[in-house]
Length: 508
Ligand code: SIN
Image 1 (cartoon, rainbow, N blue to C red):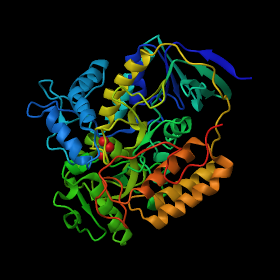
Image 2: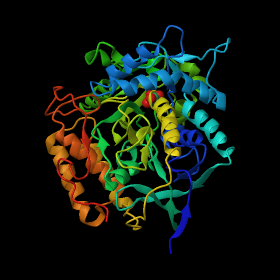
Image 3: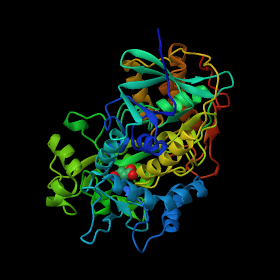
Image 4: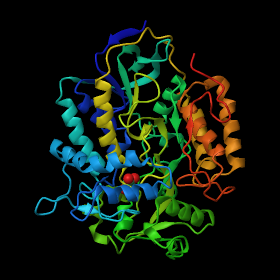
């Protein structure tokens, strides 16, 4: 028998920076986290930091211009203006909560340069520890707020909808029990899709759940084909492997580290004038090309960082050392890996999705900020700025809505099936895509459909592949070897009903 709980406030699915910021902004919230707080979410793993116009020679307009240039024609300038204008205060608010950003002697933020930023504007913590330290401060604030309830080991098994389609709560699995949670609003903050790929820098638990749940409920999804590959995940395949792959932060290239192939040749000048600081998608494709040609790819930080590694980049140092690589003296083997999803549940600037009662924030949302290619260190910022906006808007929803039309949990993918899907996604919907590979992948997804059709991760995979097949051009994170030109300056907006190859199932 399913237990029923009525909650007078937003229910938030996910407990990364977006989810917890939304909870703090809402004041009263019920947060469901599939893992213990501050684990299993990409926010806690972020090495870079938060980009914001905090320096005296910087402005929100300059930050917006860089964000829009990186977004390759698909950013919504109004969303970007909100992000960059509200960004500095969002960083200060986190500092006030206790996030220990690196400071100069006089108290100003230490700001680093990252690729495609015209100014040094990334606020960091302890070199490469921003995500963990920011999350520790936010988790402490949430734990200290009695009106915020947190349930760990809790996963959404479907969104509850009344007969009008309004979202009226969530069916959650808490431990082994199914619980019907009724609420006036649900905020999806479930993160990205890295766990749908074999090579990812994100926690494996992050598998497009929010995207799939929202799509199955009938919500509009935006730009699902745009997946960002971080160029320099640490490739430990020759050292026993590690899943997910640890990250070698872009800041290492900001410090002057060089990309070389096995022969020691610095290869980035062959691909872009900005060399190591070229846009992320360009660097990812260059590394992919060197590896595909059998030349290998390595990050040489021996001169730029060398003996400073242990205190300047402790997380990268530890990851290398744990596999027996000493980055002070040796080059770090690197590979592109799925790092971020620009696409997501389409929202307005207050996180409202296309269904009444449903909100989304952070990586699982598509506010229009990230375009076809996210600018480095804009993701924690988006989580903080738009998470707070979503939390405030959802808290203002009045109690309404009818009885849920279904209380059936949606199916899950068995682990062996998921592992097969992850390999196929990396092979056919990866850094370089083409029609033959995407069609093969779609056939593989089709074959899983009779058994697992309305399974949120499978639906998320289908949305990515469908849209990648439909977008016959190359732009930002989406590169088609059969359509290398940039041609179609329009965002993708789909629902399951109008997806190009018509998704053939719907939640019962
Ligand atoms: C990095 O540190 O390279 C990642 C930063 C980001 O993805 O924003």
